[in-house]
Amino acid sequence: MGEIVASPFQPPLWLRNPHLQTLWGPLGRALPEVERHSEWLPLADGDQLLLDWAGPASHPGQLTVILLHGLSGCSDSHYIRGIQRALADAGVRSVAINSRGAKQPNDTALCYHAGETDDVDAVIEHVFDQDPTGNRIAIGVSLGGSRLLNWLA
Image (cartoon, rainbow, N blue to C red; front, side):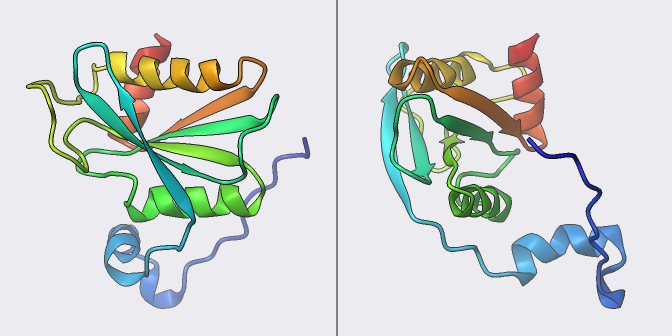
C-alpha cells in the first residue's frame, strides 16, 4: 500500500458552500455508469436483501468492498454508484447492500435502522462464504456507517 496523500480537491467558486455541495451530488450530476449484476440473498426470517455487485468476477483471495447506504438511500444513490465505479475502475470487487425496504418492498414487517445489525452480518457471512481466503472492507455512509459501527461493537 502507498502512503496516504491529502486530496487536492478545491471546489469551484460557485460550489464553495458545503450545503450546495451536499445538494450538487444528487441533483446536479448524472449517475455514474457502472456495470453490475444483482443477487437476492435470502434471510433467516423469510425476508431477502437485494445485493448489487460490481467489479471483476470472483476469484480466491480477492478484496471485496461491502457498501452500506444511508437513510432513504439504496444501491442507486449517486454516492454508492460513484464508489462502485471507482472501485471497478481500480479492479476491485464490491457489493452494495439494499437494506430492507430501500429499493424493494419488504417480505416481513422488519425495517432497517441504526441498531439493526443482523442483515449486515448476513451479508458479511455471505461474502465470507463465497471466498473464505479473501479480504473484506466495509464502508458505511451516514446511517450505513452507524449500522456498521454497531455491527463492529
